Length: 148
Image 1 (spheres, rainbow, N blue to C red):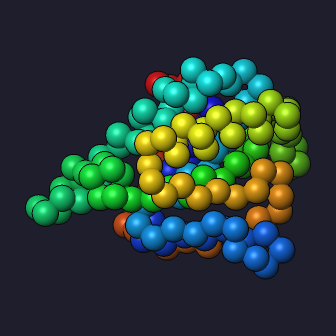
Image 2: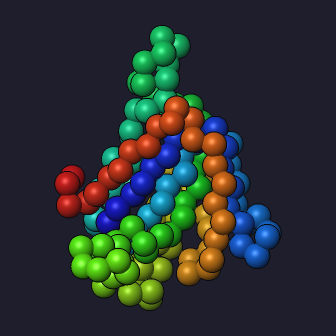
C-alpha cells in the first residue's frame, strides 16, 4: 500500500464538473492499493498517517498531528501509484490491486478513518477525477507499507 500525503490548506475533488468532496486544513491522501494489501496493512498505514506530526505548533516546529489541529481528510484512490515504468515508455499497472479487491480495501480505509476523524471526504473509486489543492508548505510525505 502506498499513501502520498499532502498537507493542505484546502483541497477538492470533482467528477463530471461536480464537487464530490472538499476540505480545508488537513491531508489530501492519494492511496495506492496492491493485490497483496489487507485490512491489517491498512490499519498499520492509517496509524502512521493519523499520528504524523507535520503541522506547526506555536513555535513553528512540526509537532502537531491531524487530530491536534482538528484537520480533515480527503482520500483519493489512485492505482497509478503502482505504475511500473522500467520497460518502455508506457507504464504497466500489473502491481495495482484488481478493482474489486482495491475498492474493498479503500472502503475499509474510509470506514476506519471516519472512526478517527470527524471530517473525511473522498473521491469516487474508479472515476475520472479532477483534484485541486493548495499544498501547505509544500509538505508531502510518502508512506509505503513495505517500508513500515
